[in-house]
Image (tube, rainbow, N blue to C red; front, side, top):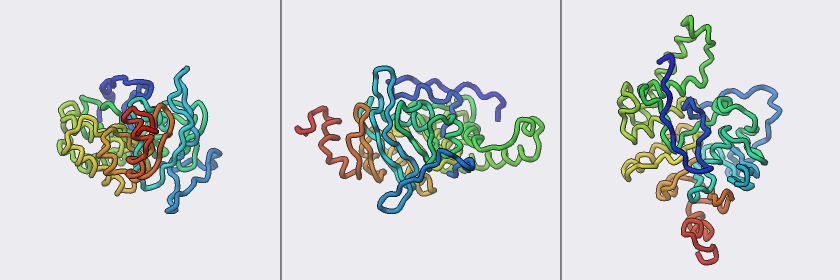
Length: 308
């Protein structure tokens, strides 16, 4: 891998819910989370659902303000192990802001976010990644001059334990982790359907670049994968392929939280859906329940709920 990677592509701004403060090193945050520190005073017993599954992620009465703008207003929901949960809402509803609060970009003004029973507030972003949360972004963030393989290996570095002196001296542990990371990266590129492992990221198609971001996120071995509008710009065939990929990711044991505007994809792949509007949760339930909810219909059609 290059010693000094080039700067990642710039991402455009959207609104207060954008990812403008996301990590500049383009490292996203997917598989086996790192072992938590012993004696963690922030541990909290995780609740379970009716099926007995533990809550992997708890968003507990979270409010987030930017000056006079309330981006999240007392938002509550749980995400359970092995679940695919959709987070939807009109533009500006607070979806990406919620992702940013989970991954350490923003700190909630009030309320708590817990992952595997541990509070996330105050943790550095790389620590949250090591706990087991990975994410992708609305706008593609890759190292364009690096190969597809090298981009994924950046994610694999998240759990490497080689010290700087060991890396500089090329000691056996360095080579062992380098070899393991390279093999894992090849496997992940095959898993997401990218065949040109040695191609520069900028030469890949738009759809391949989207999949490359997912592979890089998976390389961090998370328990929770957060996908922010992964189908943006896709044609119908690419969306069908993405839907199957999300199912395959869940099949590996990774829990998925999905922000997406394509309702056909959301309804086809999620187990439950949470709906936000103007930073407030207005509905939660199965895809069928959410689809028929008058408040959700009103939010998307722009009519009063009692008229929907």
